[in-house]
Length: 129
Image (cartoon, one colour):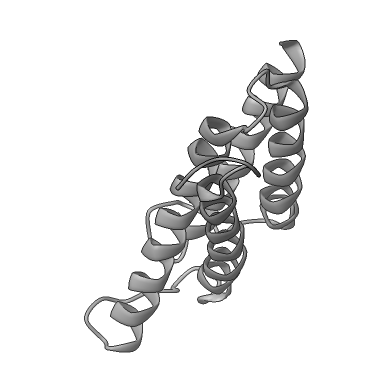
């Protein structure tokens, strides 16, 4: 149980790092994101998820997978919307360090979120449709 709790905290910290990466180009934070956030987002997200899965009693691990994958997918969507809004000139985006953090979260968050939601929707062998 402790492994799952630690994993949940690490996954939440990874998600918070991604939120900080998205907030900076949108002008919602005082400083551009440092290298630490760029590294901790994927590292804590993946390590935290692995610990949650390892410590989970649910063999299918659907709830922890969705609990992490859906917010990541939504954050990737926010990054995509911000990129389009900025490119269209509707709102200034990327004043603090450009749009690289948005692209980073869009790609990594989108891939991890999509894989997580797809994996949680798969049925175990022998389950009926």
